[in-house]
Image (cartoon, rainbow, N blue to C red):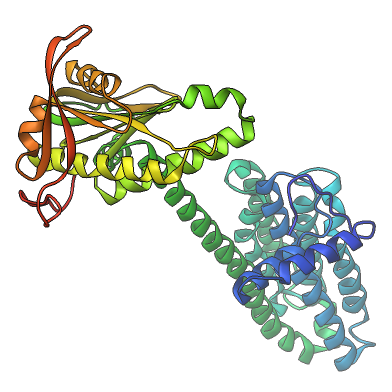
Length: 454
């Protein structure tokens, strides 16, 4: 199969074409192998690196191949039936079979040169057969190829297709009005003309089945690739946005997404000592270490049904309670915070030592929405976000500090110990607590779980 940037010729590129054939046959199911081998075979002469041009030119090659086979099949029949009487047709079919066979050479001339050459050869060749055999020979049925010519030019170049159709119609009209009913070949070999009319119908059926089957296979492959790309884009969208928000944007692209939530729980975490460790680490080691760590945190958000909002440097922000009751959101985020701390401690620091995190939780009202154009993001705004950030920054390494509003939602499912009142910049005196762990053997599920949502 031709790859972008590769040049495919008839003779010089043979070793490379054989190599691509080997790749086409390796490591894929038989339908895919057959599709790739067909593309390899039909790429003769194609030099363009544009996939759309390659696709149209493969259709041209497909038409040229089947036209060549039809011409030489007629030559064999004519030799077998009456070579002397049918000599003009034999010479004609050899000439136009060679013309069809030469079609791929014209790809190097221009994007549409081969298609125009093939269409002209079919129109002129069919007209000449009609004049040799007469209308009774049925050769005018070959003009049905004009439907397939659309595949040669595509939607973007429909004027060329219209030109070919107009030329074919003009040829048909000329043949019906001026061609003899019985041509010289029909007079010399009447039985062959009767045979020819049947063979023309069969050949037209074969040509149409060949071209349109290949077209349908290409369409099916394109639909599969499109479905895979849609799935990939959906997954990327879900990696950025909560599913309900992503679905809203898919239904109505460009729609303003903004919601107010009265009681959601917000999570902030920070890696203790990360900045100092990062100074001495290589870029590769730093990014690899962070990548694995953040992926582990992201898996925890899925397991605990909380929504990751973003990472800011070595800080991690998440939320729950946007679409579930406040107490459910707080409990989910508390379990997530405990698992987050446990994972970080087990993961270890960048320098090989222990890794500790500071975590803060707060429950309050926020506005949530999607902002941005080229790199849009789902974010939260409000005093509750600032307070949750302060809960983290005023926490202690290895501890989970929560505000009074969050502590009220967590009792009695979780153990919450008073820390006391802290002077917090911008907030004044704030009552704080430490989340110590689950209460009881039920894992802190005293209030129950909602089946879905965040």
